[in-house]
Each structure stands twice: as structure tokens, then as C-alpha cells.
Length: 340
Image (cartoon, rainbow, N blue to C red; front, side, top):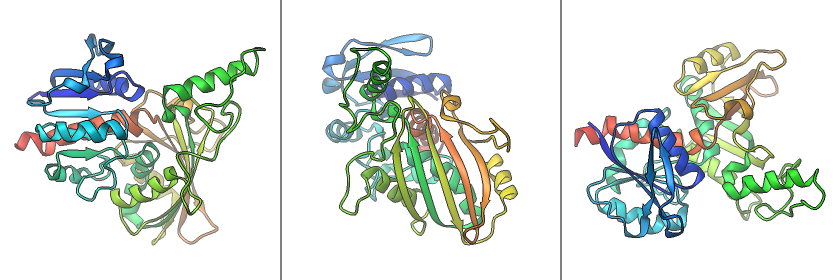
């Protein structure tokens, strides 16, 4: 059985990636609509071997459509997602708007596929933050074995997480370091991003953390277990695509690094590349375009009881956004829509 699928925000980085992944994974699409704002109306987008032309989101009728993948930001989603949901079309939303609503499931299919069953509460499913998505894929199989007490994570997040303008800013600033007269002042970021790192993603909160850091805490609790304590430091780095994370985990029970490595090798969505030699690990450049979340540098932390360290890398436009949304659609089809 095929589905009538809408991609909302089809001309953006994540929207285009959604179209690519729907085609790559051969999602059963009977009919496809690519929607965009009026300023992008008529733009052509690739969908496998075919080309689709964007339609006007403002006038689109969602009646009779099965699934809508949203990649348009919170403000526009707040307007259009309820319209789609009320028309009977299930919304899979990539923005942060619905992630913390207790009546809306927040889903990473490798971790909590059963949460999709709650979709009929509001006909909306939330996609988690990109930095959270890859981390919980790594944490869940370890939590099932030894129960996680506390996580300390430092992220190294690529500029694609901020959109096309941020990618352009990194490119222009890098050129400006070498070409006189081509210097580019910061616009997207508060400081220069080329040849620099910025320990500031999203807005600052009263306790000194940023909203990105808060998201990782709140989303990990909602997706895996409310009892897990999480503290995060989120950093923007001069990488175009691919988020990296250094994760320190404290467990209730002892977990040997060799057993952890075996557990992760068998876990869905994970690829372990962990050789203790030069180059025996994965970096962001190598993960681009891949579906997997890569785990390297698995090792015991002897400074705490029952501790492990690991390095986690993933394509943030894929697992952190578009891929996870398509996987939710696949899970929705398997668990809910085919039963309707």
C-alpha cells in the first residue's frame, strides 16, 4: 500500500534531504506534493529520477493526504500543522514547536517506536533536536543493559544546523581569510565561525545554559527515561555537515567496554568503528550522506564508578532531521496507518 505524501518546506536544506531520503529508501509514495512559500513557488526539486515543482503552502488542501513532513520552522508550523492535522493528514514535524507537548509523541524509531501509537491524540508527531537524536540512538541499548544514571555531553555541531545562510557565512569567511577585500563580518553567528568555535547555540536561559543544551536534557528524558540526568555543553564548529559528540555515561551497574562495544554493534542504526590506532575512528567528513550513527573511542572511565566514554558522529541533516522524519513515517505505516 502506498501513501500520499506532502513535503512542506521542500526547497530548504532539510526539505530537499527529505525528498532524497524518501526516494533512496523507496518509501511507498503513490503521490507526492512539494510545498513552499510563495517566494519559492514553482521551484523545481529532485525526487529520485523525477522532478517535482513546488506548490503554494498557503492555499494547499491537505484533505485526502496521508503524511506531511514539515521542515519550515516553528512559526510557520504553528499556523499550518494544525490545518493539516485537522484535515486527517498526519504531521511529522521537524521544528521544536511540539516536542515538549505531553500529548504529542517525540520519536526516534530505533529508541521508542511504540510512541508512534499515540499519534491519534493530535495527528502530530515531533522529530527531536538533531543533537539529541544521534545521542539517544547510542544511549538506549546501553541503558537497557546497565541503566544510565547520568550523561555529560559536549557537542561539536556543524553550521548546517543553522541553515543555508550559516553555511554561506562559513564559506565566505573562510575565503575572506585568504582573499583581500573578501572579508565577511558575522551575521548569522555572534562571532566569526571560520577557524573558530562558538560555545553558544540558540538563546541563553536564566541558569546560564543555552536552549540547545536544555533541549538535549528535556528530550532525552522524554524519549528514553525521565530519571536520566543530563548536562550538556553545545558548541558550533566550522564544519559544514555532521555533528559530533563526546559523551560520558555513568551507569547504575558495571558495563565493560568490550560488552558495550558488542551491544552497540548489534544495535539498530549504529555503526561501530573503533580501532585504537591513527584514523581508527569516524569524523564528520566521513559521515556525510550516510544513514548510520557512528560510534568510536569506546573506553572505560576510571574516574567514576560504572563509567564509559564514547565518541558519536552523525549527518545532522539526515539522522538529525530528514532521515529520522522518514523513519517515523515508515514506523507510522507499519504500526498505525496500515491498521486504519
